[in-house]
Figure 1 (cartoon, helix red, strand yellow):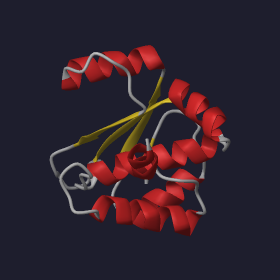
Figure 2 (cartoon, helix red, strand yellow):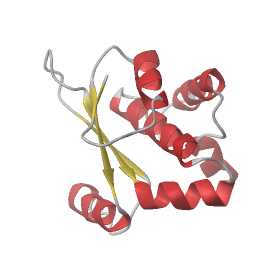
Figure 3 (cartoon, helix red, strand yellow):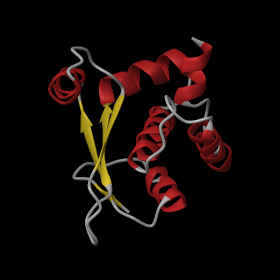
Figure 4 (cartoon, helix red, strand yellow):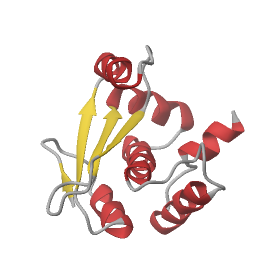
Length: 135
């Protein structure tokens, strides 16, 4: 289940339910806000498309928070020729997998495989990891 104060694509609920029975917070921010979060939390002074913050496990509380940059959602969707909902779903999937403990920078392809499973199931375009590897 997703906890969010804003409207978001319905597919995100389906993706969340597919990946976990737990709750996750979802926040949408603009490019400037994301840059500030990235600088404060990761000491990286630039914007990014998605950030994830896993929480310490406490029963009956969210597993973590996924933060999505709506400015980059619009930009990438236009650039790659798919919908903003699809781009949001890709970023949410990527962020949620990080909340769930996956790490494409350290694992042996497990996160990429799980992303591909979600992409196939929900008929989404290429994943963030695939796009990054192709760059």
